[in-house]
Length: 480
Image (tube, rainbow, N blue to C red):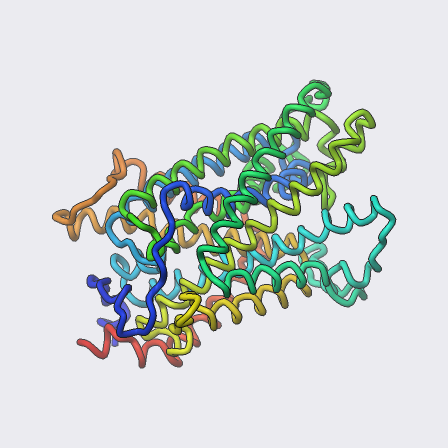
C-alpha cells in the first residue's frame, strides 16, 4: 500500500485517448491562451482585494505587497512553463505532482485545486454583486439587502449569521456562465477574449484619468506604523502580500486548457508568462492610483474603486466605466474558472481517483458537460452563502500549496528524468525553484490560524474520499 501511495505516473498518452469517448476540441492559439490567463487574473484582485489589503493591512505599501506576490508568482510561472512542455495535458499541477511526487500527493494537490478554481470563482461572484448593485442604484433600482448579502459573515475569527437570505446576483451570473461553458470551449474562449479586451481598456482609462487627481499626501506614510500582527508595518505588508496573492490566482489556469491548444508546447509557456507580466503592470498602476486618490483607510469597501472615484466629483463620469469594467472583468474570471475546474475533475477521473461520471465528454459540444454542471452548481451555492474574505483566503492557501508542489517537482524531474526533452527550461533552476518554494511558504506563514483550521478540515475530507474510493480504483494501481 505504501508503495502505491508514492507511485508516480509516467505515461500520459491516455489523455487524448478516444476510447474514453469524444475528445476535447483543439481550437486555442497562443493569444487565446494568453487571454485565458488575463481573464482568470484580472478581476476581484484589482477591483476589490486591492482596496481591502490597503485599508486593513499594508496601507499605500500595498504596492510592495503586489510586488512580493508577483515575484512569488513569477518563480512559479517559470516552473509551470517547463512542466507544460513536458506534460501537455489538462491536469495542471495535479498531473505534474503525479509525475514527480506520487499518487497521494497528486490527490492532495488536485483536491486543493478545487479550492483554487471552484472556491475562487465563488469569491469572485460574491464581489461581482457589489458592483452590480452599485450600478443598479444609479438608475434607481434598489435590490433588498436580504437578496444581495451572504447569510454568513466572518468576524473576529468566527462565522456568524447575518439574517440575510442569499447573494442572488452571484448565483445568477454563475449559472449563466455555466451554461456558456456547457455549450463549448470555442464559444467560451471567444467571449473571454472580448471581455479581456474590454476590461483591460477600461482599466487603462481609469488609470490615465485618475492619475491627474492623485494627491501625493495620501501616500504618506507609505508604510504606516505597525498596530499589531498583520496590521500595517512590514508584518502588514506580508499579510497584504498573502491577501493580494489571490489577485494572481489564475495565470496557471492556462495549463488546464492544454488539450484544447493547437500547439501546447509553444502556446502554454507563452500564454502563462505573458499574461502574468501584463497583469502585474496593471495591478501596480491601479494600486498606485487608488491609494493616491483617497486615504487608504477609506478603501475597505466592497467596491473600493467606486469609493475612490466618489471622492473626486470631477471623476463622476468614470463611475459607469468602473462598474461596467468591473462586471466584465469579474465575469471573465468566473468564466475561466468554470472552464478550468471540470477539466481537473476529468483528468482525475481518467486516473480512476474519481468516479467515471466525471470523465464524460458531450458528443456534440465536446465539453466535460457533467463536470461543468456540477462545478457551476457548487460555485453558485458557495457564492450564495459565504462571504468574500473567507473564500479568498482559502483559495490562496490551496493555490500556494499547489505552487510549492510544482516548484519542487521541476527539480525532482530534473534529477529523475534529465533525458526528457524540455521545450522550455527554467533558467537557474537550482536557484529559482527553491526560491519559489520558500516564497510560497512565506506567504502561507502569513495566513491566520482560522484559515489553517479550515484547511485541515478540507484536507481530512479529501483524504477520506481518496482512501474511501480513489486508492481502490486507481488505474495506476490496477495496471501494476
